[in-house]
Length: 268
Image (cartoon, rainbow, N blue to C red; front, side):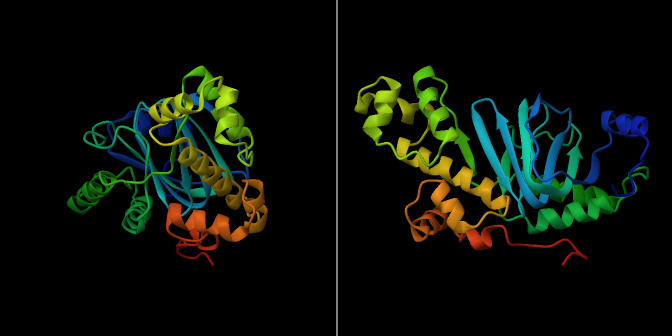
């Protein structure tokens, strides 16, 4: 926590005030259970330097890896958990500052400017009034939040009971390699009916959804520093090279480099 009052009551008053921004540094345990569903009066920008943040809101699940920034809008009902000793910084924006910003969680892959702005805000004495330079920095922050990544790490969970049964089974074991016909049988549907219904519910084909689910599971294991070979086998790939190629296709880089990135000043 940087230049922020340590008294809990004063912190609560600041959070509930009309102060435009509040900023904190945080570090969590290696693995956390799901925090119960909740919402915040303020919007949250999380700048992760370590670990992984997983957020569920409604029927959507988002994955926010380290070296990226995540946005959770105000009054968004969500559950969350962290993996891999999550650490970083968090900026809370007042409801007034959140006007015109995204209404759903989103991720920022190109986060260098956001990280720099967050580091600057962490150094502010929040008890001092905002000068023109600080107001300009807040305006820059809001401009950046308006431009989220167009290919978020998002997985839609089907709501229809039979389709949800298939999705839950796959999320419990993403390495399950049953065929499309076998999964249609689990849902109690004909193959074509299953394909159409699943695609209509989640916005992508069943094959692409299963690939995305495997990617989510892989990211979580990689955040726990498991080897690429171990992860590839666990998520259902017969060869490490096939897993790496899928990873590169989906995220534009290899598993070995995805979590490698910027360091906070003073860290080695």
